Length: 258
Image (cartoon, helix red, strand yellow):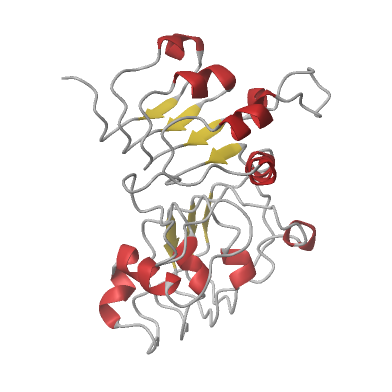
């Protein structure tokens, strides 16, 4: 497999007789636990792939489509079940016997099954494990514990690599946590403009929470170009929305008035 730049968004390797996906990312990137690829689509159908390397799969937190149909797979790594954005992962045409056939074309059910087989990978940006009381499958339920300062720092630091995405999807938040706010307000060490850390964040995912508004979020991250605030309890758009140059705002399934 050719080694690709981490900014590649779509990759099609259909019908190339590839035996594996080893080498997709450089060793330098794989040596970094915080590295995440920007790949959104990876098409591997019609090769001779026998295994999907778990250390590569776990880097694909932005992936929405992974087509590995018609290969020689006998199983898939459980970490695939923790990829938060993965919506389609057809596995038809593989000699898989350890996963029930209906799951091979039902990605949502497959992900639940895989999460039951093992714990989530280390680091932020993944779905929670099944039955651990912190599932990100929805915005309801008891309020989650506030992140510690070290957890907030880790979440924000992970947003300063790759796609500059702050991923707080399904954290059962009803407001911007003070600990994360402090991290975003801290001075950037980038050295280019002397701005804040929040000023470097480009994408924000706060979907599947219990947020009532986005005012604090947008004002502290003025460089945002994409926000996913779907499935919250937002009743109105923030007054500062005209000051942010958003190219994408996802706000479906909220409480906006008709």
